[in-house]
Image (tube, rainbow over all chains, first blue to last red; front, side, top):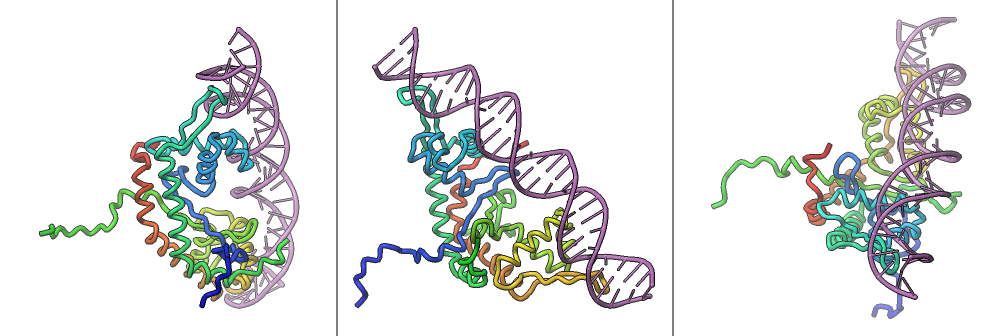
Length: 133
Length: 133
DNA sequence: TTGCGATGTTTCCGGTCGGATATAACGCAT
DNA sequence: ATGCGTTATATCCGACCGGAAACATCGCAA
């Protein structure tokens, strides 16, 4: 019988390398990558551009600029922000924003699975990183 | 019946967007992405780091630095270079270099296929790029 | 009506990245 | 021995990026 051990870790936890990052490039300088996506995720959780930026160790200026670029790149804005009000203002994802976020995450999963073979091969060729500074 | 039109284009040719880029991150600043891989490919074709760099509009300094980083990141070097000789010197991929290059390209193909559904969805949400400056 | 907290916007400035440049080392051909 | 073309390496410097900070704006609450 299979061990009933309550292994809560679906991933080995000892081999996060190499980590896969993907970026969608559409146009000369318009792109969607891990950074903007994580920002979207944090905006969704925090309800604020500033708070999301702080959580990512990012200046408000940069966070706001990324949101502006995101909103400009898509037909409909991904982030809806408002000033004033009880809590001073805030921001949340639009339906399109939620959609893009979900789709990107799904894409990540699909890709990690589809490429696991090649990734393993490349990892086997990598230098051991246990002694890196 | 379906039209027997000799549609030769499996892709619309007008919609290369979004283009997918992937990067393998292993460590704090060690990574493998489209840039280094293309450099590997050109070194293989040109037999020279300098020529490959020129082909990519890249200074020799930068090209050489990328090769150095590549060689440092893997157990065995990916590029074997030599100075002097009839043609002044040259560089070519090692067996490991060929392997990594091929594996990365294969990974790209696998991923483009596995993620086509999500990519299409995201593309449908993108602003039309036909009128970009 | 005053205050608050967030968004929106501008200006300033320092660190860093990478190009340009110069130079040395190398090994074969002539 | 000299020349050549490439690899290898150091120095200099301008451009660009992004953070810091200051400030204006907004709308509700007290």
